[in-house]
Length: 232
Image 1 (spheres, rainbow, N blue to C red):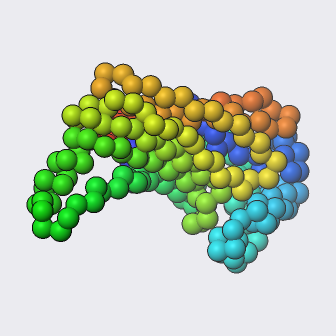
Image 2: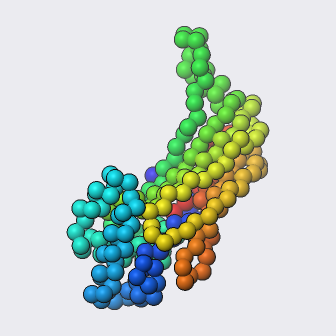
Image 3: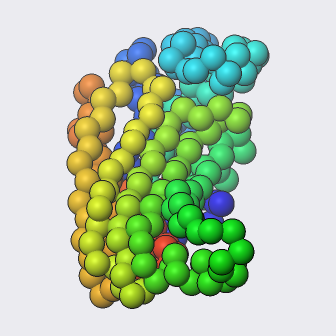
């Protein structure tokens, strides 16, 4: 699902492909004008370095890229907007090869009952009224079908009489295949106005560049529906 609400925060998945060959070299090519032969070669090396970090499946796909495609991958990874929260639309317009994918996952289980004792709608109503709910929001940043960065924010909360009583857990998971990028994270959560919010606060450190912070997460109501999101 691509069309979720987004907030313009500097994001967890801003990338550092350029630092493999010098931040200034790659950055200058993203400011305008075609890349030089040296920059093209640097982009290819960046893509190949990232490829070595990928799982076997995506790595096989990336290994099949032509030099021209690898150059494009490296160029996109060096773009300062790639992975920045709120920039998904502009960067996808600029690079047709980029896809930012947001996915909602419902990990809430269905309560067990004896067969034939309750109708399906009764089970659903009971589950909505009382019990634990677990929701996750996952964002992938892909180039040519390969995901180079991902974050997943997960929250479990308890509902009683259709009201959120407490947040059981709130945590974030970061997957990064970009060379020379360091991330740190901590989670915050709260219940306000009958809704529960879980945020993954991420700090991204890049050599020779300032540290960038960002947010990823969501607010959910007692039914488990996300009413607000912080994504790409």
